[in-house]
Image (tube, rainbow, N blue to C red; front, side, top):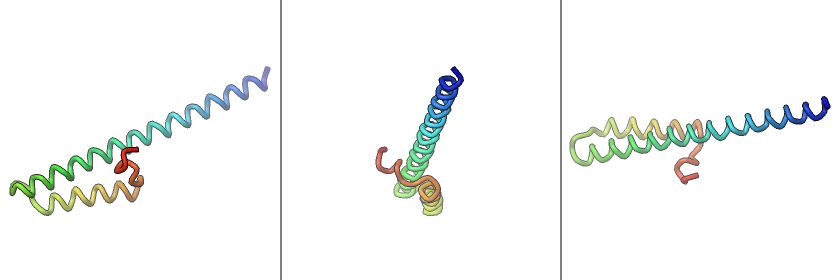
Length: 78
């Protein structure tokens, strides 16, 4: 009986770990998507004459920082 409970506990722990990893991936993708949206908005504003090159550069640096920390999977739609 104890062996069964130990296996069930291990399986539940693995499930929790996998769930947390997936949640982290989704949150990282959402953060990356938001940064890309900000970059696009900054670039658009700059091109229209209502934004600044500095704002575009800051947005680009934020995207690059996210890529350096979390990878670029969010850029590929995965």
